[in-house]
Image (cartoon, rainbow, N blue to C red; front, side, top):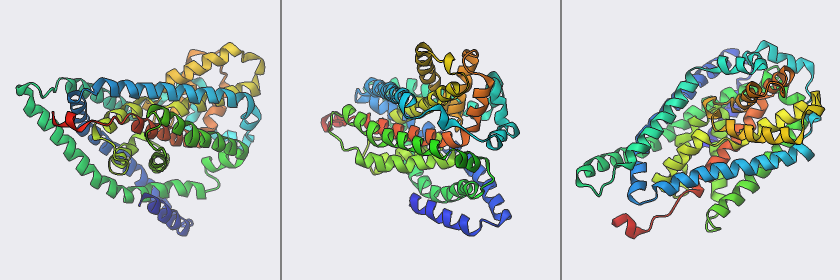
Length: 408
């Protein structure tokens, strides 16, 4: 149904492509619906974390689920960055990041021009999205701590445990309906996204049309990561006991939702409901592992940042990039990626700006400016591939519970 909604939206936008009023209404309504979807995601997380954590605690899978989630984040990040290092040496070169001055001058006309100072971008970007992110982070940690003490073995805690699980079930049932309503949301949101593609004078189309070679190479690179690397990691995590193909399909749908909304948090209920109803995942592991990865897993945004930084530095000052500097960049890209979720849709640029703030002698203002110019295009790859990684990681952490344990 989501794919049908995307196709129908594209047809409608093509039909109304010359109607400025209709396009304006769709774009304005899209922003409202994205913000509403993020709020609904926060409600979903709040309703499901406590009961899911308590259920993991009861079945003695609390610690191992958290450990596997963090292990997936670490292993996936290292694997993608190693491949990025190889690609940066052999496949994606500085010449791919060439851009006509007409296109690059768009940066001077946009708020992203603040990125040229690194610290200027970080200060200018602080706002409501960061409050939302840290609010989710604080709530998640707090509810997980509370859930650890909801041990139903103690009679006095049994009513609280039953209440938490009831709220968890209500949350999943309610958001199953919400995800059906999302068909309408996504019709409008994709319409706004598609309208910018139809507008050949828009920033995103000017960047894409001037960087066709880079677009193709990035597509091949992240296609290999999403369709080969993540499935292999998934099979290793599950000891080759689960088929990755169903996860590929669910990851594709969720990744498209993330790309069109420009915010990974928007797709939280979609991903967890798909895993629950189509991939037969347990609610408890889907919620806990999925939320951990939505908060911290940005492996592909880290790789995007590394490739952009290395390529642009080589284009402007190739002698300044030693082997040690490249290793430093790899580590910094991964480290800052763990915090980049606070900048939805701008994860890649946040990592670049943070490295510029830490190592100003390595990254010039010229590199920062061109990094900002590539945000409309590279953010699409980052959102898509990061959501792919989260889907595979969430399913990889799904630990089957023996029925005897359920009844004990």
